[in-house]
Structures are given as structure tokens and as C-alpha cells.
Image 1: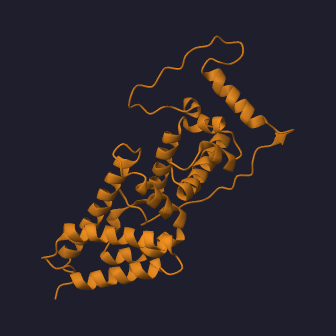
Image 2 (image 1 turned 60 degrees about the vertical axis):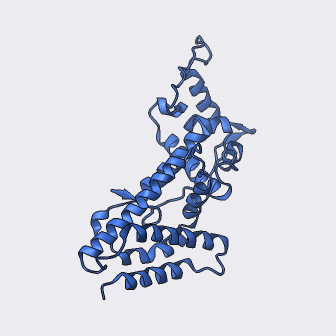
Image 3 (image 1 turned 135 degrees about the horizontal axis):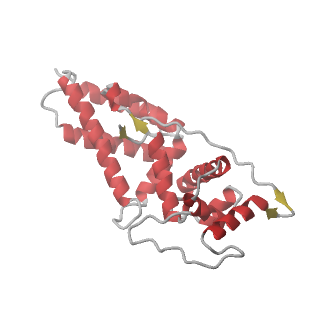
Length: 257
């Protein structure tokens, strides 16, 4: 199973209706935080104990990791992920504060961290969630013409496309949290195009002398460039049409004489 941004995506947005509040007091959040504090030994009637520090390089845990999630907790966690996708797509990871995200789901920043531990881990889970939904089965026999609908699909999932465009732009520095993720992701994308081209060559729909590695880099570069142009000026750039036209022309150019 390979993953590639844009080929398939199934995303259901869950609308958050908010907690019941009495006199401005959020009862659900109060008891959730109370449980979390009790769990690490800071609750009433128990002696304080220190939470073991995470070793360097180890992913920090959130309070919700230490117990079996109930349906309500799972739903709330998904609501946070959905809201984070929207916010990170709009403002980027660097420009998004936890307070702004918490406000979107009717929580406090402290309550939000109960589910994810740190903002960095939330970011990692946002892209992991995105990739799980974006998985494709390459055994279906993809061809060059399978790429024709990528533009239309990306228009239909514009927020998710924008999310990765924005996060990629924030990940050029090797020290950025998602730098290695995107290095591997785009290599996976190029590798998928290489495998499509190799299969087309074996089926005699692509010439034997075609430089498959060069074309793979070109395809990813063109698709990313068209995405950025459309996001910048959607009124004058028809992404679906431009992608279809490019793939049709490429297919014709690579075909045997």
C-alpha cells in the first residue's frame, strides 16, 4: 500500500456542537481535567508523584493515551483533528496558536493538550490522519491516464490540498518538524510515477528510450506548480482542466511512434 497526496481521500467533517455549560462552567472539561490530574498523582487525597520525563527523541504522551478512550473522547479527539486541518491550512503550523484552535472546538488550550500532549504531536497526528485516509492500492493497475482526474479531485478537497502545500512551505529547514516527512513523501510520489511509467513501458504504451526518473520529477513538479497557481488565483487557473491537458499531452508525447 502506497500513499500519495491527491489520488484518493475520504474525509468526513464532524460538526462540533459544544459542551453543556451551566453559568459559564464547562462541566465535561472540568471532570476530564480532574481525571487527568488524578491520574498523574495530583488529585485531591493523593500524594503528588512526578510523571516520568520522556527520553530524548521519544514522543510525549497525552493524558488521554493512558486510558481506554470512550466514544465521547474519541469523537472529541476527531473534532480537534478536523479543526486543526482547517486552521493549519489557513494559517500554517507556525501561525496557528493552541488558543485559537481550542476556541474552534469550544475548549481551553489545557483541555486540548490533554488529548495530544504537545502542539508538535498534534501536527504529526494531523498529517498521519491525512495519510491514512489518502492510502491507495497500487495493485489496481494505475496508468498515466489515471492521473487525469487529480486536478478535479484536488479542487474537491481544496482544504486538504492547501494543508500540504502550506506545511511543505514550512518544512524546508532540516530542523522543521515535518522536514523528513515531506522528503520521504515526495520521494514516494516520484517512486509511484516511476512505477506507473515502467508499467506503461512494459505494456508498450511508453517508448523504451524515455528517461523515467526525469519524467517522474517533471510530473510531480508540474502538479505541485499547478496546485500553487490555483490556490493563489483560482478564478483564472482551472486546475482540473490544466491537469487533464498536461496528462493528455504527456501521454501522447511518450507514446511509441
